[in-house]
Image (cartoon, rainbow, N blue to C red):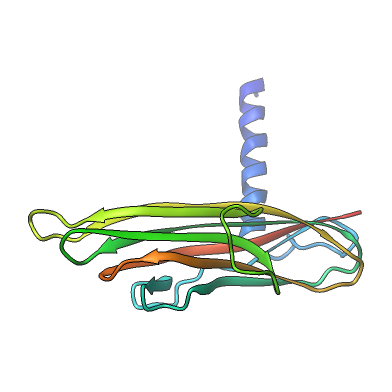
Length: 185
C-alpha cells in the first residue's frame, strides 16, 4: 500500500466519522466528561418540505430551529447551523426581501447580523418581462461559541428578524440543521 493510499484511507475514515457524528448515529455522543456532538435532523415540515415560509405578514421575529444541551460540567459549546433558502417575487416590479439571522441563547433580544453568529440576507428581486417570478437561492451557514457553566441546561435558537419584506415577496428556508459541539473543561 502506498503512502497516498494510506492518506486517502485516513481521510475516508475521518469523513465517515464526521458524517456519523452529524447524523447522530449511535456511539457518536460520549459521556459528559468527553467532547460530544448533538445535532437535530434537518427540518422539512412544510408542504414543499421547507422548514419555514415567511413574508411581509409574518411576525417580525421568527424562531426557525432550537436545540437543548444538557451537559454535566463546564465547557465550551460551538453552535453551528447550515441550510439553504430562496426568496421569490410574485408581483410586477422591483421588490425587497431583507432579514437578519442569528444563533442565540434563549432570552436574547431580536436577532442582528452585527451580533456573533449573525448574518444578513438582503435581496432586490425583479419580476421578469415574461411574467415569471424572480427567485434567488442562497446558503445559510453560521457559527457561534458559548461558554457553559457546570450543570446548566442551555437552549440555543436559530432566529430570523424581518427588516423589510415587500408585498408579493416570500422566502422559504430548507434543510436547516442546528448542532452543538460540546468541549468540556
